[in-house]
Amino acid sequence: MNDSTEQTGGPDLPPDRLAISPLSPYFDADKLQRGIGIKFKGTVRNNIEEYCISEGWVKVQAGKTVDRKGQPLLLKLNGPVEAWFEDLGDDAPVAKAG
Image 1 (cartoon, rainbow, N blue to C red):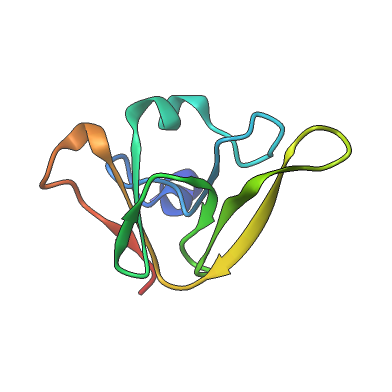
Image 2: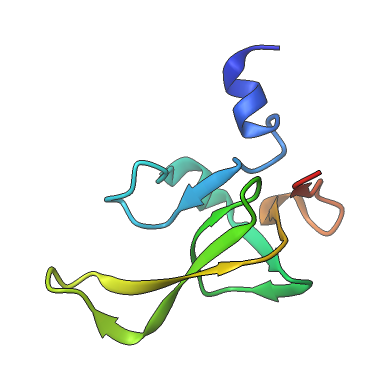
């Protein structure tokens, strides 16, 4: 197996870490276009700005608060994270820490 497949978990699993901000080094427009489903602490969430499956955290916006550069302030929440590609339907393989 090559290194890129190990990091992404394969072609049908989302990457271990992904962000929606183009300023982040973990931004990947191609993967985001496929649609990423996130389950955090057993609840499907649609307000996740960034996640990391292996470290078990997500970042969400802190209301409408922004920093001095106009970027939204993010809160880091710890807990189990699961991710999948939404374009694969209901039987999509789920990436989770294990």
